Image 1 (cartoon, rainbow, N blue to C red):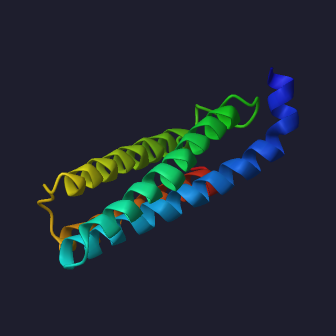
Image 2 (cartoon, rainbow, N blue to C red):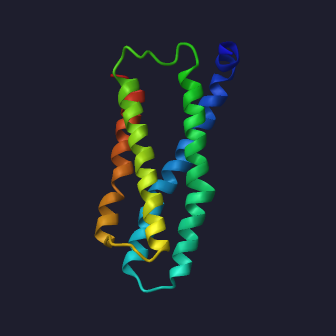
Length: 145
């Protein structure tokens, strides 16, 4: 199995990066939709449709692909040295990003039920979370401290 992963490493890494980009794009956009949804008097169905489709068609599949391909990279011999700090900080960042993803999914359900209690300002602030986590993850992987 390790030979397969080693030989496929460049492809796995390329598709992992593509999946991460798609996941991050969705995580940046969905809170912005929530800002508009919370602050504007427009048809609820329009925002709910956009939010649901973004989450189900882009963000969820991209997160799953990111995790599957990332774990394939972890199990590729010679890629990760767990005695260093960077894989642990990256793992913490990815777990936090996944938790944020779950938080966004829960907020979508709040909107769908008409139970949103958060302001547009709160969603604006929360829109910074994926950026901070992205910085942690990218610096961990590139600098490898």
